[in-house]
Image (tube, rainbow, N blue to C red; front, side, top):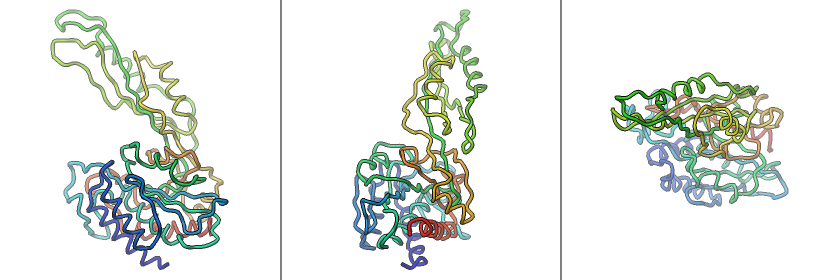
Length: 355
């Protein structure tokens, strides 16, 4: 299989994906484009809702299985765009367009890599690829729904923009809804139990609180109050203040532990997690995938951003072309050279581990 030809066609696929809107739960048209790739290369595939997946030609149930995964949904374009977010524009070596960096470049690079290895015999790992939906919304019909459909997975490479360095751990996420209560009343009268004033002390508690178990790979748990809402009219003191707290969890805690701590210690009247399923994830630094990547000169680090790794229970490595700091920004782009390098590194990495 010619790597240069695969790379050229992968970039053309990415251009088509950019020009086909695919917000979370609305990815049916991009799923069809990905199906076309598999049909053109005569690789049998299956589609489950808007997830497209396939296994290598010589899949052997006696061997461990390596998952290659990235997503084809996008966020909605923000108002800062100066270029058409749904037009693939190449300027100065950059490919602009919504989803180009997050995570279209990763997706097409992994598809090209899977295609390269698809019909190779005597691999030490099976390969399964999932081009997944609903990653950006953590929806019910994304990769999480596929784990009962695809073969059992022993280890995974999740394609997200990491500059092709090795994200060996990733923070989990718990979002909490909290209330600070007080006594409602008329603004003209004294009220020593004003819920808004009560929230000042609560906000200071969240600002000052620190969890006592840091992680070597991921640092400290990061807790941030991100929303506050109270009151409906100028002359009425509200009965309660609603807060939203975003907690990025390191691999020293489970999400349940974080919930237990906050429910026991926070000064809120009530604090409730929305869900506990987006746990932190990691891969041992002595895993052969990591050791091979390090031998190739790639660096290791812990990632603060969430991905579909959160729904995996097996060891997983986040790795892909592009730069995470460009994700969700106006005039999003990826360098064409990053895709070219990404495909070469993916292939070399797998050649060192599965061939």
